Image 1 (cartoon, rainbow, N blue to C red):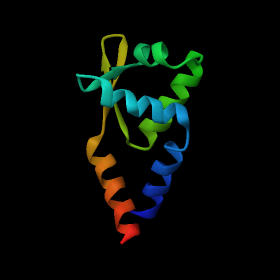
Image 2 (image 1 turned 90 degrees about the horizontal axis):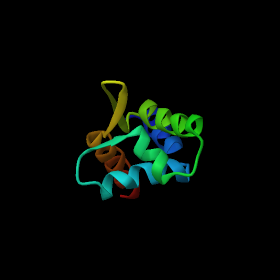
Image 3 (image 1 turned 90 degrees about the vertical axis):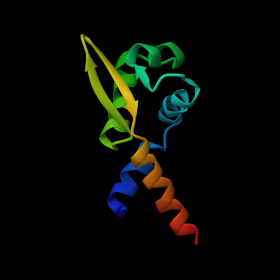
Length: 92
């Protein structure tokens, strides 16, 4: 992972609402999250939720998939793993 990619992910993770979205994946049994589900646990207007999801998608942390009229989001575990490895390398 290069430093620009690391910076983009770090910026995406610098908001508590976006962290809450990622934490929701940990609590779910299936591997996807629908936009409507995000609205259920975040007390934000729909445009704000869309903005936060877009930031996570732009950082490649979430992968959007169209399912009929709905969008579902998958956690991009490999990018998250690379980010953690990059952080660990800074520590050593």
